Length: 270
Ligand code: ADP
Image (tube, rainbow, N blue to C red; front, side):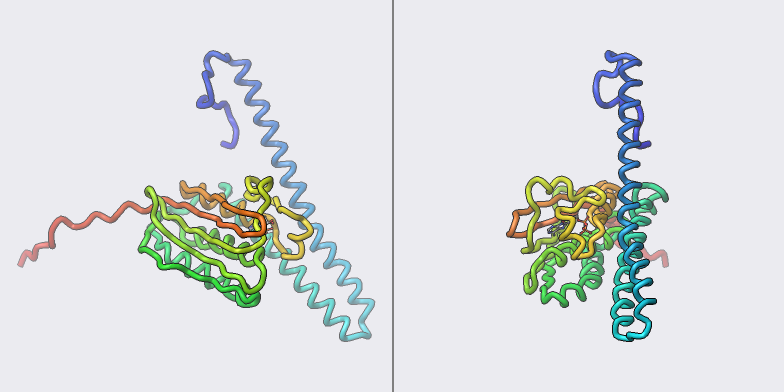
């Protein structure tokens, strides 16, 4: 459960049952407040594209005798509809990752396949900005995971790197093994993240700059999804960033145990 009496957080017996109940109530209130904020945020985020669509539909009716304007409004409606469907898709992803559905069984996944898939999915956006996606020499790493989730996570990191980098820059993807984990690092030379915002960018709907985010078309859910994928795999995600210099996001996922080597060649009974 999300909340409950936390027996691991201190000398519970010394505090007695009243303290425990109070702590439980406080935690329940906090969870409730988070839920309320979330619903309010979702409502707000849905309102913007839905409102724009309604206005555009009305304006299109008024412009029926001007085919050029109709075309222009239709293009904007497509844009708003895309935004809306991305938001809905990401909300569904997030609710699944937060336990609305059981986590699929973990299986060995090749990290290079995850990276290749993510690069494929972001290549067009990168090309459109003249950004080079440079994938470094990759060791053969196998993690225990859900391939689709890991691809989504790396795709989100790459998509952000593209979105928050100027044209003509370079994004590097590096992988390595470290202390039982595979590390996948995405490094950009983009705008960077101010120190005060760094810890919060993984929160749902948190954006460094609302106005900037609306021009890049972000939903504010991408990094929350990455964080849940990491946590569900027993891993983590972290960020290094310097304003004006760029950012590195590092996703860590436990390596799969090495497959047991057969002790000797199978003997032929014949
Ligand atoms: P969004 O859909 O707005 O990109 P995310 O959850 O993916 O939402 O990211 C949250 C915020 O973190 C972004 O709005 C942006 O301000 C900041 N951010 C994420 N990745 C980067 C990056 N590579 N460089 C600079 N800022 C970033």
